[in-house]
Amino acid sequence: MRWLSSPPLLYWFLVCVLVAWAAGCARSAAPDPSPGLEGLPAGIEEPGGQESNTPGPAQAQYWEPFLFQPGQYFKYEISSGPRDGTWTTGWFSVDFVDAQDGHITARWQGEMDGGSFSSTLTAPSEDVMAHMLFGLMMQPSAAPVVSTLLAPWWGIFFVGHSWELGAGWSFRSDLGSSSFEIVELREYAGVQGYLGRWVEDGSLKAEVCVAPGVPLALYVRMEKDAEIQESRLVEYRPSP
Image (tube, rainbow, N blue to C red; front, side, top):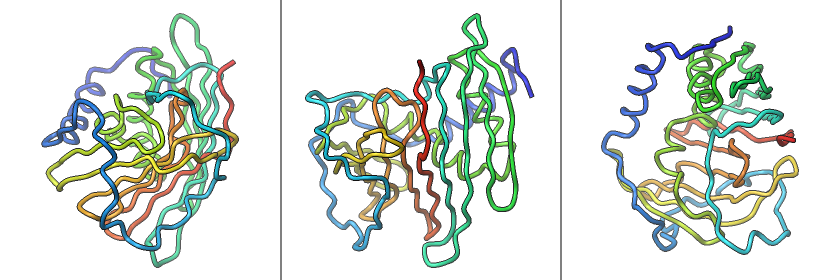
């Protein structure tokens, strides 16, 4: 499918999604000191990738998700399943092509849980993420991609904070209090990023790794009710 303009129903739908996620959420205006990880469950599994021995940036950086550029390409290994059961594995890839006049074409494809999905769309560069989110939500096999890489909580909880080793912040939602702490440098597909842990009421909710300048996370592992969804970057091509 190819969208050249912004359908009004799409925007109202996405506004409702974002409002639902944001309801009752409040975050600090600036990063708090490291909140610590008291109560973190034992036996946290290795997040894969490679431990990076390269020193991180001398100054803290900020991460801005979904600012896609022509020429970028991402491929992920996707996994989903119960903590103590059989996992389903698959993959997802997306590349971005210059469509002229401030527009970008996004082409994605993937396979998950025995089903395949693919699509192509063109939109103004600032609207590509919204169109991608809507398109992938209409493809059931892509559910783990939406819940890990394109979820609205990226913008709610992680934008505007300083990313450096040891940094952390806290926030509250209707579900309780949460904290996030950046614990190490990690490398995926040759890209160094900051790995952090999101703890909610003493239980590990997610591990995420992001790299400032790269608009999608390098690694995401979400856990809810003993169900786990994981996305791991295996190939990346930056914008020229």
